[in-house]
Length: 103
Image (tube, rainbow, N blue to C red):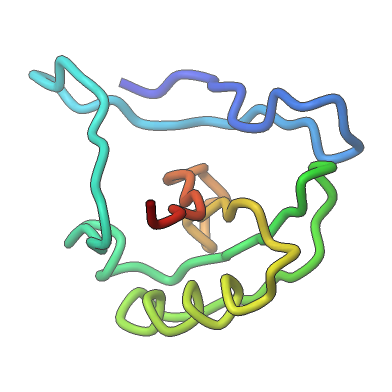
């Protein structure tokens, strides 16, 4: 099912909604730690890194197989708070990647 989703609700020039797919039988949101999903790894991706003020400070496109390296590169910048991943061809929002602090 194709629906519209508010993926960037922040009060920012980057406020955004776009189409996302919900798959039949999917009943809950997935939360993954230190893992790139197969569905992400097989696509051309657009990664957009945001600071704590919800302003985009880095952006790039990569094949899914290179996503982990690009995520690491973006998070090497201490100003990056979170990253949005979009499917580059259709522009559909795929997921949010957040910085995880160690205790």
